[in-house]
Image (tube, rainbow, N blue to C red; front, side, top):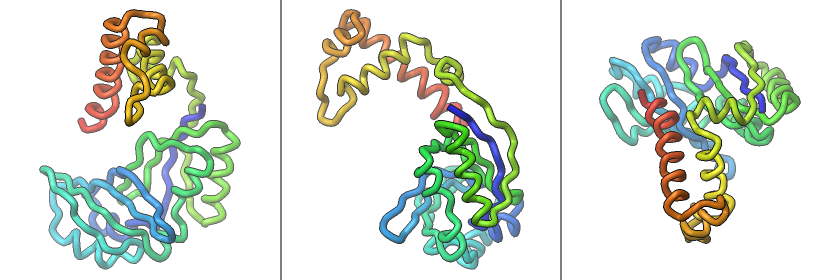
Length: 215
């Protein structure tokens, strides 16, 4: 695996963010439905006055809608429009099996931290950025082993094995395809030990991803 950190000068929300330099956008997810590309993202800042008007005037998005507001954060949903839609790099990233670890934006651009399966996949993604005439400023490229990734998540090797077995056996499927006892059999440990290892792995993963990401 390869972890790439880079900044992209992308037109999406460029006008809004440059007119409101105190704001920060945190990408949540993107969905494609036919010709539509819908984005969910948090907008963070101390002052939202005039933000809705700025979004309505931004040519790269359409139908901006506030879904919820918590403290100094608003969750927005909007469609990509015009140049924002035409030059969206998300479909290319999906095609190259890229996984977004973090994605934020401010007045200086969009800041990506993406895991690609190979250097070739990242190079193909970067070539498309050039074809779209998007300036890309490369920060770091890190080769990452499974052990290094687990260490970043705080997982021990047995916890990782338990989480992987939970997926492979169907223990996490809906409806569930394997019992806790069967998960223990797959790990060659008792049902109680499998339960403890799985729960500790989930707790560690949540603590080091979801909770750390929120803080």
